[in-house]
Image (cartoon, rainbow over the protein chains, first blue to last red):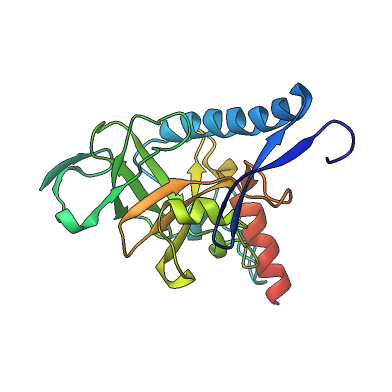
Length: 76
Length: 149
């Protein structure tokens, strides 16, 4: 037992591998379900990413000193 | 083999580039064959479904912006795609790029694991609670560069 709500049992033994079964109350399963759902949702959003991807390098802030470039001032 | 792709239209893809995802990926369990393509914009890749031309995921190597990333995947997940040692293994994060592109995020909690030798793949869930479904790539990249100075 883990605590007084979660029961772990040995389901199978193959050589040096032990397969465990976990019996847990609904609240524990809900947490796991939330993770699955969050990832599913994120995957669906990710599938909508349009084909023209940004160039990461050009999106990073220039860290070096020197002339500051005003946002409206077009540079090369 | 000719494959219809979201980023490149119809292209010729070598049979050997085909990856089999027996369980698909979460929310897309019915899609079981993909090809991995370099994006025109490094450091991204595309995981293109060969069954649904509109379904393609942008991937990134997590180490690009999170150099200490270890996916921490259960051994049974790795066994499912027959990974016997780390040399067989490729790890990617699925990227979500919203309209405001600078807010792009990567899913480090549910990485894509590929066995490059056996051409198998799956999406696994990390056992490390540190990894989230959304990490802001540009922010984390800036933090890496700051530390490197």
